[in-house]
Image 1 (cartoon, one colour):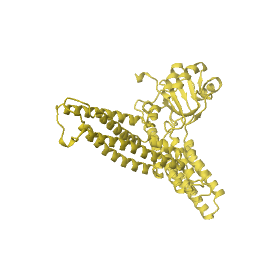
Image 2: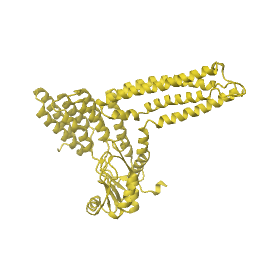
Image 3: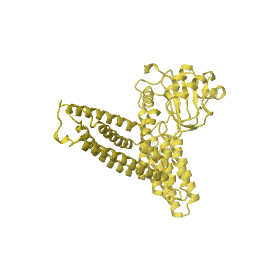
Image 4: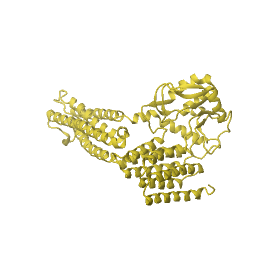
Length: 477
């Protein structure tokens, strides 16, 4: 069925057409990495609810075994037998009370600690805390134990002709779950103590950035089915002119940050209506209700596209990493400029952020960033979005840090060294021009703000090293 659907194809910056294998990988990724799954990950109810259901099913199994043992259909080991119903009831009450108390106290203290930490690291701390699978499992295990103990408690003293019913196996399992809770509690405390340390926060954001970049690299597979069909219809330049002069506007229905765009859905509706769509925003941009979200040519198809666009994108109160790796770059930059503020004055944290930013840029330098052009299977342009450029990512990584690091030689020198390392991994002259522009701005800022001659000479020496290495790649320039 999927073979009969048109597939959106991202045109490479260096190729006339995109290979079908790359397009297939891209569409598969967008199918599974959906915004709905991201929304489910960022909740504290999904995993705990699943574990509560598991606990209820576990109780149903142990209760059935206990009931069979009560009627003499099987026998339990002697060490599982509770002295009396009252003793079993006291054990289960103690387990349930202890577990629910620990959950309330530990998570309250943890949220307080994270609130204090977020004042330095930014508001992402609370979101990452909720998004962390380990934290979700911890809450689920505790709540599941509470539910299991409560169910077992309610089953005691169900009358029968063989006397008072005592769920010996269920009580033993509740005690085993209590031991599991102790192990999970130790893990949770250790996990939180590590996760609020600044190097761990920075490394976690960097891992998210690397993961998104690796996903882009994975999409760039060699073509196994031959090149895509030649361009048909009007050129991109002609379509842009038609969209500007004759296109119909599709307004945004609500305000918020654009979190997800269903590119494949838009290509399908554009193919069905024989139209071309130009998006005004990329994921991560803020859109205001009533403002243009897209332009459609011919304008007669705007109403149909508007309905499809409403289903093919998602907005929310915050940005996410979904379809927007540069968000991780912004997070690292935010931590760096907070560290460079006079109130914090922690340049070593800024140096750590620069190291991770340079690692991400080195990885991005090996990715062929597309032009934001998507085609159907016949090769016709169906969707155009704002150009995702290498310059945009590099400038976002260094501009604000450079502006905040005026008069700080240690940070300026580190930035210059980082640019040199990134330049050594570049693959095109355009990338090197972007980095050279940053190096020039850093040098001018240093000459204006650094007063110590020896520090200024160190910065100039790093700049000359950058220029010398850049000349090895582009001797003409």
